[in-house]
Length: 106
Image 1 (cartoon, rainbow, N blue to C red):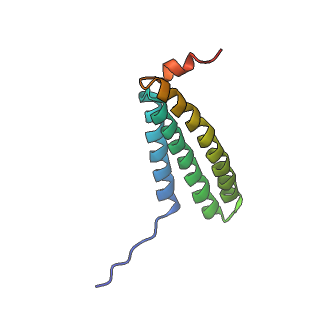
Image 2: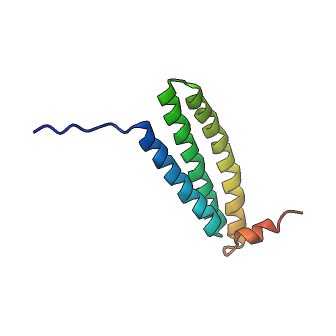
Image 3: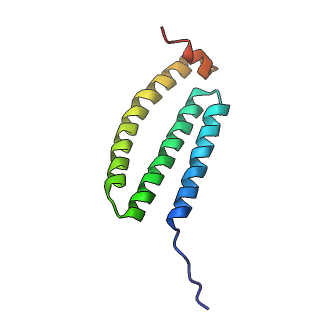
């Protein structure tokens, strides 16, 4: 007996991306740890990238995939700078929350 395995459709990818985005949004709104919030923002960014790639494949256009490439390059630079700042703050004050970090602006 041969089982045919259907490949995922664009709708499946869009539902997955919306689920990932929702998990990231809830994480940003609920958690107060800056490192966890940062990871949730990155999860939301990856959900948007998945949407771009799925729609670019569906429409047969390479523009969405090109956009994802540039977004990933900018996100990598953002992670280097942002993660460095957050880790240096958390080393000095391990119990720091997002509210404490908001007080840093002059």
